[in-house]
Image (cartoon, rainbow, N blue to C red; front, top):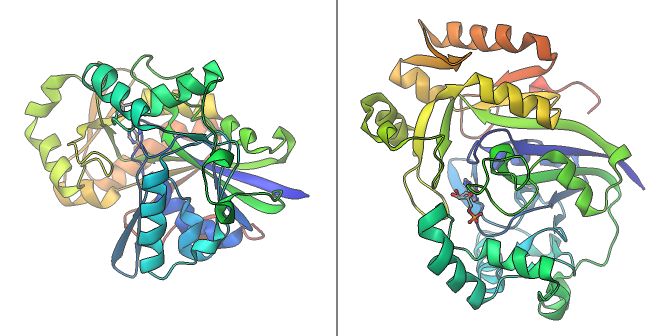
Length: 337
Ligand code: IMP
């Protein structure tokens, strides 16, 4: 029996720090599950000054929580095995990792097709994501149950408190993003129901954003001219805005509050975590788009105040975070979580 299922997901174009939040609160849950995507994602976590990365395995693994890869995910078997070896080498308990038998398998041919037909045109990660989901929909895909070692196959049922960890983000959603510059799965929190969680059990909706926007890959909403802005380039370097899967430089822009308001309304978020305050604080420039205009604020405090006041009509809890470990996250959530 499920008590409740909370959902962590991105409100922008990915790379907001979902992994950090998931890791910071994972120990309050019985399971941490991924419901979408595959090796296109990259979740970075800092524990005691050491950086860890996963692409498909949920961040519950860093806290010793059973970590489930759901039926809506796509899996590259070789990369999955490499990730398991990496976690094992770093003393994490890999027996907690399970894959739904219905997750789909990315083949070499999917990767080839993605790189040949989509990577350049749409800026995909080249991981074979779209061709794999296409074969799934054509009902000619290969599933995990036919390929994966049985010790990693999930034959249980979710129960107790569940944390659902999203990959990619609202503006990369197949139905609501800027198509075709999107990914091939449902990134909005309702996608978590594909884990076999009835909607009535969905509890807290925790949306994650950054205090500036970034885009990895192609999207006309992020014009090439942004590469020429000296301050935005400083943010790339200070914020280390390089793709954790592709190594590509991410295009940076000032936070677009109009888009953030839309994604909060679309996803129904209760908690908004805004990451990477430390980056803007170091640069000392505070700008934000609102109602189509770029506003300049005097200090980080003024920018936080501006964001809080502008979003107050949404009645959500706004949490600002300025360190990579997410030390300041847990204390903001209500007692009795
Ligand atoms: P695909 O998911 O590899 O097909 O890529 C489609 C689009 O989503 C491209 O613009 C990618 O850069 C973007 N994308 C996919 N996964 C991520 C992610 O984890 N973070 C940021 N962007 C992503």
